[in-house]
Length: 317
View 1 (tube, rainbow, N blue to C red):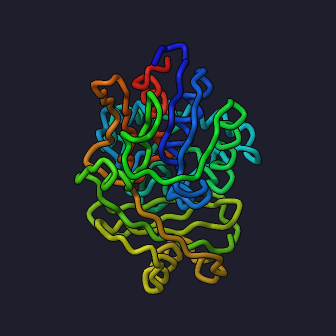
View 2 (view 1 turned 90 degrees about the vertical axis):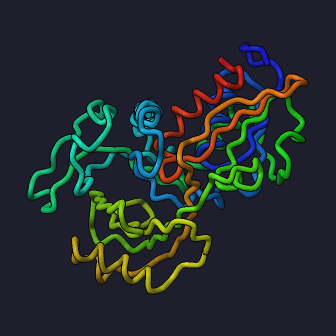
């Protein structure tokens, strides 16, 4: 495919990675179709809490740059929160120190040590993008359609049978069977959404050695409470005991959460891999397959940086 965008690209996958990649391709002049198995509102991305932060994603040396590129975009989109679903919100990454993070952290505006009154357990204070996925995903789809793209609901069983000169694989966990890629594995996340009792800041407290974490994220539709990180767990059914434990952990930090009315339970499977796969394959007949999957718990965080790199690999400069 020529760099001027002639020819057609089909992006397989309609979550945050697929849609963001499709937007970049279309706005660079390519003719793009998105093939998605389900509407964007039903993808794994729709379940995400929505906080920008590199979480459960490797390799850090590359992730930092992808994340920072995405941060700049989200900061711009936050000027129109009701349209884009993106807001800049203050909060604390608990039990985290700057010297534990990669060089990218020094380039996050305002990131600093949290004061005792902000969080007794210590951590980092930041003003970061918090993205309401119920608004952001449909907005991304509309932006893509306005750029001339089309979205089709259809399943794919063989990437090489997709009828396009360039195919971009953004299928996340489905790449386990579709590629096939045995390095893909699910990391199950369960969330509880409650009526917000007046909390305006977010907080995360993550123990990477455990399969549970504690966080709350104020979104327009309620306060999102989390969470879990259960490796190789496939169940999409919310577990009542897990939900109770999530509420209890969050209420231990903010007691007003204990009495909040439960609105919804959610489960999502993070598409986790030892490292993101972002690379290009070329067949003898000249057809190109670009892989962009395996973003773990940070698809939102890395989406724009990865989309730009994927577009370049697709030959769309």
